[in-house]
Length: 202
Image (cartoon, rainbow, N blue to C red; front, side, top):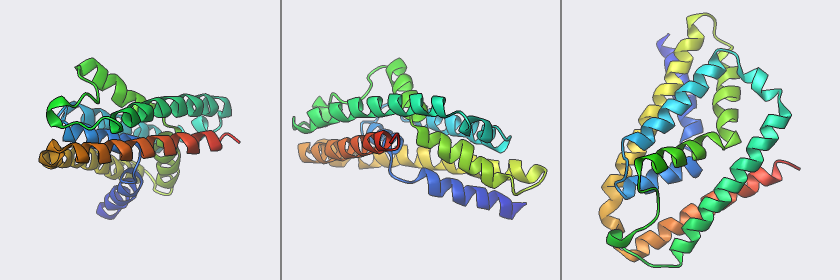
């Protein structure tokens, strides 16, 4: 059973750690020292719910709804393009830590932005519900739940480490150049994923 847990942990980590819009947002807000507990918590709990849905066998049902997938893809692409545009505008305006204006300032805005970046990305459902759910089906009985628990653990570890890592890096971002590099990187990630979502429709 321990081996099954670590299999879920390893696979979950390999899917979550890939550079993406959600990770870029968690890191950027970690650097800004904003909502460093609630943002990774929302990401982790969302993953936990989606992984649980997949492990319980709902993934195949969701995967069979192409209309739902198309709507989510379009919505996700539009949101990511808008967020990338915000980052690009900030890239054009050098700033330091003291006059940074990017990112949600209120708890409500932080929660809504995190949920949007998490739930409007169809790849999240593909990785958690469909892929992890399908792989867990090779285990019987409690094995599926243990595999899912491993994947959920990977999510919690990664998002909180990422947020903490952002806080540790924050002294570097007292220089405007560091902010410009990060904002440009976020722009590239957001627009790149938005473009891949649009291409996937054809």
